[in-house]
Length: 328
Image: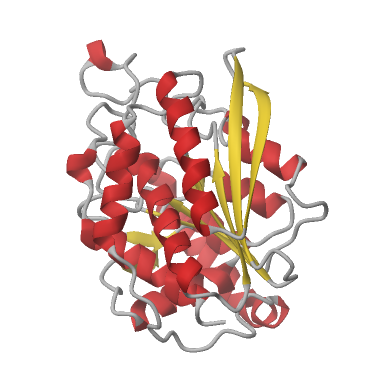
């Protein structure tokens, strides 16, 4: 993913967005179907941060999951098996995409569904590939090495896989689709369309013709120590009522210290593609305005390894999303 705006513009954009949202909040609240049937969050299931941590570790044990590598292939087999053990149905979407640097990648998107016959659905997604080069590493000699991607984005995948285990034994009242997308992180700075290639393919070729969902939640970098999840600016532009619903449930669930009520950064990520196809989608992502990059210190470096992962952060995100699901 790419930080969409330079940090010096964030304050201006934040103030402008607050003004815009305050003018339109009443209309957006009435137009949105995302929160019309939700209720106050009640903890009906227990999300395990320990289990999610182990699922991060399993992904890292394969090595960097860069498209075209043995680690990527082995992880793909494991993801398909894991979803098949929990979901009602699993679709593997295979495709070829072309990167900004002219490479052809063979990719796989995975869609695991619960209650697939229901027209009332929630979309949960994360990318499962790793960046092929650590171009943000402080050591220039290491910038051509692949990124392990423990936080970016094995953490999001792990949370979704653990949610799948929960939903297997605790049937949700709503249809839920888990979308694990490939080739998100083979992008070029200043070229927004070069990112999220797997999601771009899925949006043009959805696994169900005319696919729709009440809303979507993207999980990206949701496991690092010290994480704070501000209200991502593009999410607030596209789906403010969904953001506010999720953040309210996080606070009611006891995780307000992780889910910051202030605005975060503006990110080019998979959720932008989903919003453009007509589904309101938000990004739960750890952004840090005291960082030169806007992200945690291990972002796009060879240091994005398991030592960053905090079970408490995984628990906070996973339990919040679980409470969203079971509030319907």
